[in-house]
Image (cartoon, rainbow, N blue to C red; front, side, top):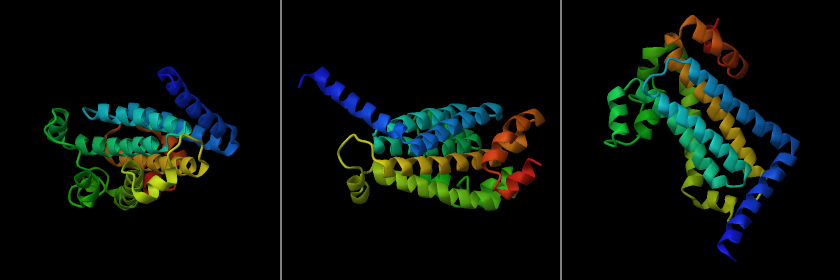
Length: 235
């Protein structure tokens, strides 16, 4: 097979996988919802008083969009990798917003993003009581729950990224439409979106002007109003 024909064959398989996914009304609805959530998250980010961590937050949106496209095209391992990068970027952005020196060291390649320090260790994690108490103590319980969700998502994505036995056998070795995998990805992406909203509220809402807060309130009250503390914060 000529080189051009080889790449055309891969493109055809990707296009066929997306076409089959979008022919399913339920899958199309879920995919459209995830795309809209990324657009809403981008709107939230533009309303918040971000500083030097803004580039990481913007990168999260790009990674999320790429991951959604890859999932629809049947590239599931890459889609889970992209979702992990989305989660990592939001967590790191929140962490670096309070640790500017660490951000500078990361930007200059002196240090790497440390998932355990940023998301797991109670004394340093953005989900831990010491961090949350500095910015929005009313969300301590919510961040404990959503922190566990984000850590589980990160772990589950990593199973696909590192091709553990179970995950590798689930994906197989073909580019094709696999509804269970795409459904799993879309469900995980929704959880990541909601967790991101809670993280961002904890870190930034108290620093928002009344105008900024009013801009993001409709999104919060529509998508994460089940978090009682958020209803209080926005009341």
